[in-house]
Image (tube, rainbow, N blue to C red):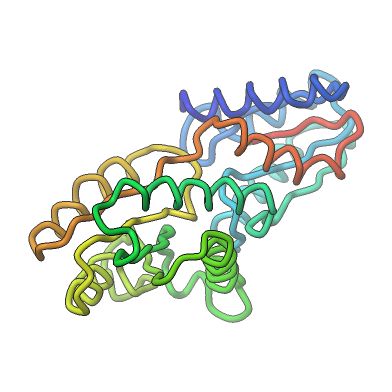
Length: 255
């Protein structure tokens, strides 16, 4: 939550520096302050329109669609007509790709033999049934990974899902453990994980990757490192602002 609030504050300050009087609020899907409650507060303060941006660059009906539904539930509680626009994805935003590519380059430089390492892009797994049909989650993740790989000039890269629930075979794969096993079996002794589906440090990063995945790689004789998270880095805030810029006049933004 602390990082999310810092991101919102930095984004609002970015807008103000550009002469835009747009407010930035934080709403959560599973914890306080809940999105529905924040939306009521926004409307009560006189906002005429709301732009929703989830801090996840890739669209899925379960994730981004769920955030949009929460905003609509909040609006349904109010008595005033307020327009609402949801940013469905920003996975190919150039400034986002630049920020992540820079982190990949910095991460590779810290390895013993960068030219012989493999970059493993990851994102949160989702239940298979939630992305059935034409859901673009998988294709957008692949596009982001390819764009970063091309910009970074990476020789070897792959993709895996992480942080799946149970039973694991009902969630999207391959899992990060499966990929670590596969890549170490191919002779890779250094792996750099770039979690493209996440924009800040939290449990899925600090435990699932920094402890669990790292320890598993070590048990196979491989070294696993991770790129630095975006958090409230100015380059990342620029990426969000660039995506929202064309949609703004004096609108309110919820993050």
